Picture 1: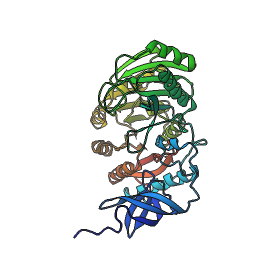
Picture 2 (picture 1 turned 45 degrees about the vertical axis):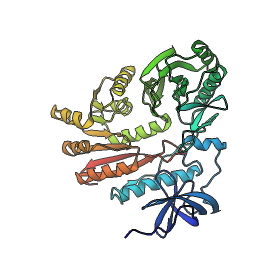
Picture 3 (picture 1 turned 180 degrees about the vertical axis):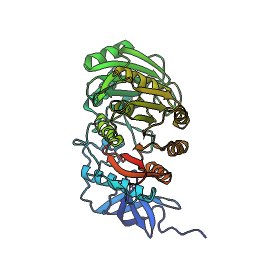
Picture 4 (picture 1 turned 120 degrees about the horizontal axis):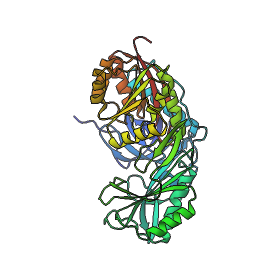
Length: 458
């Protein structure tokens, strides 16, 4: 017999929020039935409208607040800014840090059964605004005018936006300037439904330490109308620009970048530093969005690795070598592996750029390459993993357990998959010693962690 739900669609009910979901929605319970409501905060009492019901949970819309949380703040921007992906901007920064730290503790306990692990206070930013060094905004047309900004939630309607408070000012300026130039030159915007038009996206990247700027113009067509005038105006109006790139994406797809990239002017790369390590960043390179907190994250990983200069280190999921190059400064040898060939090409280039010779990079799946290294006698004293949101591959976890490195340093961008993987490693003979949450993306629901594990007793 199916359960009768305590609410139905279009009901108006009074609730009290108890918790937040992993993406920042308020959680209220009606006779034990969870109702998720965007913008609700724990401790708040409110009237909500039920807009969707399912077997295990429902979704509501906030109608009226009766009692506000002390952590609630007014959104510090125009109404448009809320479409920029900032799920937590209605929470004070103090409240955001508290929520994220609690989320890590709860998930480790619930999923990983790690109730007694040491979780340090989260490391936040002194200034949690204007930190993103990259933006890529969709372009469209409204009332005959070219617009660019963010997609309205759960739609493909573009909200024309002049700035985002989480982007570097240089990035905001670049996006706005290119939009104005394209509007003046009457370059046709891409029409997603008809698959016609020219300009699909505008991307800007900025070196936080160097100030160097890259502009990427993404079009449906091989040709850009008024291309030379576009280049000339960008150079004139953006003195810090070092690179202008044209990317062609002719497919019907939500993927932003296409396969063909051409240099229009300047250099193919810009440069930036994380600590003392220099990185070359191309239009297609993966590079950390918040280099300030990336250094905090990597410094902690280096501290947990506890290197004396004699150790051999393996960096699984090494990407463009960011952690590898940090580790190489303090170790005997670092082996990095990554499945994306372009990332390994960038990693090798970045090693050469910094004169770092005690690193070796390989293309392939970590769970395939690392056992091969192990068979060749390259056993790691320390193994570092920095996997994507889905966590470590099961075969890699089994390889770690069999290889038995003295230490595992786990860098995570998803507490849920982190907790799952820590449980597997714990059952395989490792102990979780300490966890350091780091706020890499203020005003969003994301939280990063660095975890130290070792074999044997705590």
